[in-house]
Amino acid sequence: MLEFLEESWDRALTLRVSGKLTHEDTHHFFHAIDAKLAKYGGARCLIELDHPTGLELRTLVDEAAFDRRYGGSLERCAIVGDARWERWMVEIAKPLYPETELRFFEAAKRDAAVEWIHEGL
Image 1 (cartoon, rainbow, N blue to C red):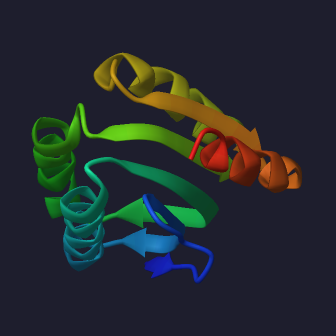
Image 2 (tube, helix red, strand yellow):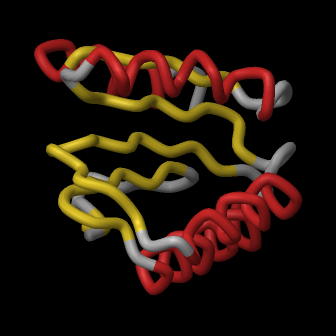
C-alpha cells in the first residue's frame, strides 16, 4: 500500500509504503511525480518503509518503466526504514540511478531525512 503523506511540499513527495505494493500504487506514484515535474521541472521524494511485505509481480515491470521514465528526473530520494535489507536495497539501487542522490536513513533519523530533502530548495 502506498500512502501520500501531507507533509509533501513544492518539488518533494513524502509517502509511506506498507504491506504489499500494487500496480495501482505505482501508477499513483508515477502520476504524482509527473505533476511535480510538470510544475517544477524536478522532483524529490522521501519514502518511509513501514513493514513492507512484498509487491505484485506486475510492479516489477513498473520498476523497469520507472527507471526509463524518471532515471534523470529525481534529484534526491531519501529512504527511511529499519531493516538491514532495506539499507542493502538502497545501496544496490544507487548505480541504477546515477543522476539521483539516494540515501538511506534509519527510522529514528527521519527528521534528518526530511532536512536533507529540503536542503537547497
